[in-house]
Amino acid sequence: MYTSHEDIGCDFEDGPKDKKTLKPHPDVDGGWAWVMVLSSFFVHILIMGSQMALGVLNVEWLEEFHQSRGLTAWVSSLSMGITLIVGPFIGLFINTCGCRQTTIVGGLVNSLGWVLSANAASVQCLFVTFGVAAGLGSGMAYLPAVVMVGRYFHKRRALAQGLSTTGTGFGTFLMTALLKYLCAEYGWRNAMFIQGAVSLNLCVCGALMRPLSVEKEGEHAGGKDACILPAHSTESVKSGGHPGTTEEKESQAGNEDLQDQECQGQAWHRKNMCAFRVLKAVSHLTLRVRKGFRDWYSGYFGTASLFTNRMFVAFIFWALFAYSSFVIPFIHLPEIVNLYNLSEQDNVFPLTSIIAILHIFGKVILGVVADLPCISVWNVFLMANFSLVLSIFILPLMHTYAGLAVICALIGFSSGYFSLMPVVTEDLVGIEHLASAYGIIICANGISALLGPPFAGWIYDITQKYDFSFYICGLLYMVGILFLLIHPCIQMIEHSRRKFTDSAHV
Image (cartoon, rainbow, N blue to C red):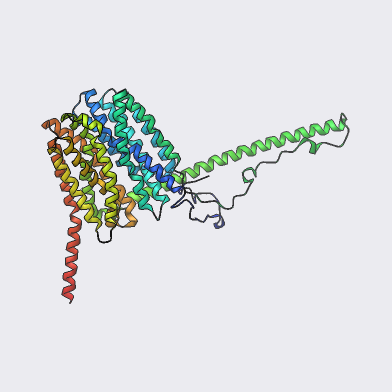
């Protein structure tokens, strides 16, 4: 039996001799750890890949419900945003119930959201069934997939996380093609129903998330039945007389009375043991909930010192502006292709698939370049951001498939800087605050993903062009990059101040 790390030390034994000693688990950095990478990889395919392919369904919803683009875009943005925004709060479920149960429940909720959305009668219904329900289920399954890889790997954690997150690119490529085919063959409603069935594989991925365990010492065989009285055979109480004698009948009657008393005593002991086990389980669950809430509260609300870090606050503002510029092309590109009459070429090789493939290569290449000893991670991170914002500005100027394909390739490669975000966050706050700080950054990205696509659709409804949507989002992204520049500016000021102080002492 495997128990989560939260369960360790929560038993009811008395005395220091019963305390368990934690030993390194044989599956850490090997063995079942690679199954965790595979499970997380498929979670990224099923969740992040399907969300990045929602532009296909966005076109179908526009034709079905005849609502404005700004209103319809809220469906996709709600699903994307809630997936990331609820991350810090899903940590409470992880600390209390463990990653396996959280992922399985999240897979069921996500699948239910897809299936209910197949019968939606309006865009407002999709807000609830797909935006909220499917988004919440995605968040419940996504965060444990990242957490479990981190728990199973210590030495090769960066490699494992990099391999698992490439599922986003593969998933975008596969899910875009799958949703296009399903919508063309069966209609968007049946396509969402089938996708809901596919999403049930999240429960399989959750079942593979076997929590790390320690072997408990001091357990003895038969302890489970130690309080149950042994049953006596009838032969053990029979007398040695002949059959049919009066003494034998009296002895047999006495034996029956004794057996009845023993059965009643045994039943009484069983009832007491059942009540004790129930009480112990309830007490155990209460301790887990209290401990999980305490860990979650101290992790997110006990880190107020993070917000006194000016560079980290600037990084949060960057996250609020940046992620929407990456999400907007995935939602609105399929409709832009229809407006430019490029559907035939896009059906052969979708532009969103180009972004997805180059996104994979971008993560790997930018990660390798950032690891070089003579290269600063911050410089690589800034250059990738500048490249992405430049692509956003150029995209409205391209009206051919070849031109859009080149810009989409640049967007995909530049967006590979997401693999550097944990490194940059650690550089700002230190390793001890990395988990809480990264959760805050992901939440800020979720807010950006929530507001970005509806804002772009609202600009189209006013101007009847997507050009201004990309221009305004590019300007907002530039504001976010200006916040990023605060970090190197502060470093330069401190360096010059230190240099001036040293020269003054000399």
